[in-house]
Image 1 (cartoon, rainbow, N blue to C red):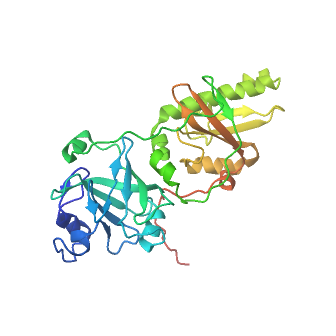
Image 2: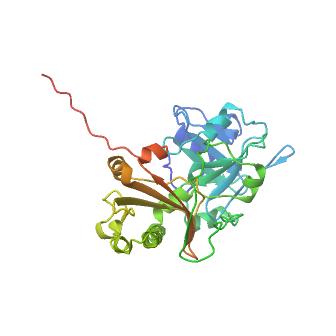
Image 3: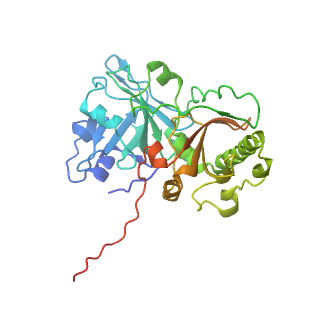
Length: 341
């Protein structure tokens, strides 16, 4: 049995031997020998995708691609509908709990290349038979040699995030109202699906420390202007960039002030994505927001324009748990030893 390795080439039989070695493999037949979507046995929610670009099935020609940001456009089997059980499971897929493994090739009768795991981005709610999905390749960027060996040509991201409305000067934040809460995973229209192949900004933001630093500097400028405009130059000069002085262990990034002299603890989260982009927040930051709910503020900068150093921003005051739906991404397990009296 071969091990699973990013960028390695596999036949269908070799993939079968990794995920379902206790079953019989039949070439060109059955689940593992023929189907494009294969459920991994004994793992509810785990799947293997076998994808061959440029395929046709009857009158349907699959329109599939990967962008420079690692966004996979993928279609289900032509007969599948939005209300099919398999499609509903794929829409609800959570990459923190389950895995979808992508094996892809660009020509028939050749081995598949393993591109890693997938995370749901969106789907087209207006089209079915087939259903159209966009997935983020979680191991992106993949090694250049992988792309060369698989003979895969990446397509440019169709449309970059539109510029911030109302931002016309550099080093400026435009404050807007918080967006309305949205219903999760309702998908997008066909027009939006075709025009915007938006990557997983949350994962990218988490790796971009420079974006976070620039956002914090921009918020400090905003806070100084807010206090100065309110006649409190004395307080504007006392703002502390806590994350730069103490590091990230304090539970917030900036210590500012209210106009009456009260403290304002500010956590800054920034993204080049839109207002609905999720973000990562530490347990320490959540706990601090609970302890100082009245004076805790989360400044959410979005559509951050790196070139102009500008962004739109909404502000939420209070306990993070009251304003956001939080999902655990990691656990620390400690052995519990029973004691006997």
